[in-house]
Image 1 (cartoon, helix red, strand yellow):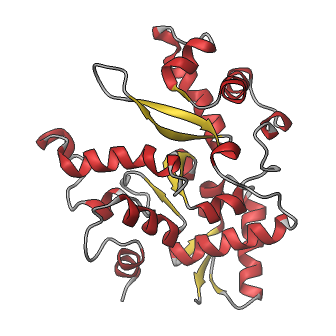
Image 2 (cartoon, rainbow, N blue to C red; image 1 turned 90 degrees about the vertical axis):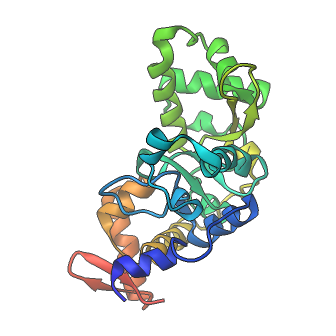
Image 3 (tube, helix red, strand yellow; image 1 turned 120 degrees about the horizontal axis):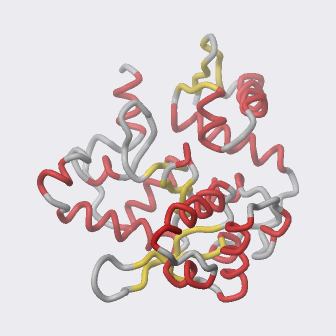
Length: 260
């Protein structure tokens, strides 16, 4: 079996399509991480291809459809039920993390105000402060509370959300119906949405995360791990080398293959 076929099996692309949020959660728990939609030229597990056989571009040509409706609802409901974290993280794309992988990757103490330890840019800090003071809020309410509700402020607000997502500071947390149009995503602080215990062994947690990444990717390199988890490339390479030392991986030139 070649790598493409092996990944199709590992990433639930073959077999029965996912039709429930419970199976979607089981998929994310199994692979550890997944992006929402596939992207040409980027090989990662994604939820879309486990739900439907349709190509993403068919959404524009043939209409949204039941599969996309379910997927769009699950992305906000999964974190609200604490079944998976969702936000902008893997390769700076909308993505999911299993609760177990989230706990290993979360870089702070696991307290709602631990984001204050970070050197956040001002817009991102204001968003986090509003959520800390008020609890989970719809995006339009956050924009108004932070003074970023103008038509021209959208990109600025989205950049701040991206910073907070990559830092695992915030997650989606359900939706709120705003009347006409799409429901608005609710945001919440990750450390309040999920129980994240303080780490006694950060190095061990990162080794587990690297092991999960390689187990899911089957073959990977340090650059891919670095981009996925926002780690320095030297740290990514060191964690993969440690897996080789433990007999859980073997080197293939610049790449690594899982032996499990």
